[in-house]
Length: 223
Image (cartoon, rainbow, N blue to C red; front, side, top):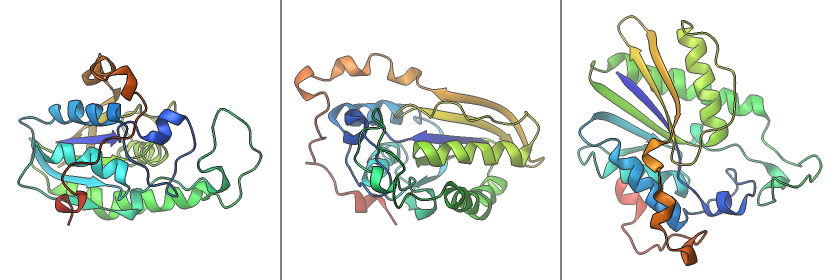
């Protein structure tokens, strides 16, 4: 079986290059929506058993495009995989030093909730899945980076994952699992080949623009 760890498509905060954690529920850009649609094509013909998502709009919007390829399932939302809160740095440029942030969520608390999601929800799902099935988790840079570390440590047969750069927007990690033997067979990281030339499909005048919200409500896709 396969696990897809997916980062949400480009948000308005990503475009502006500012800290956008759980304190900022921003939407995708027009480019981000195109990225999400290209990402969804990856799941055509796959046997997707479950799609989990952070409840923030940028992840739900990305996950809803995947669900368009999987009409028989609903979106499972979990606060456990929401992005880290960056405290007083929220909305500020990460290209400029601002001093020590106030009210930032400690990393150990992020780690604790991601571990809870993995061991109490995701791993239980993995062990029940058939050989050809897959599960999708749509989340954020910090949370997915730590989740990948937890999975590597749990299966512990392909070495230790050392955090590198975060997933690109609308990119994914693909992990192949031998569920009966609880073994990690292979790991393909930061796959973004589906996004080649996607930026060329957006009018220059719309680059960085917020996605036009004239579409189906997100709650129709969620439990």
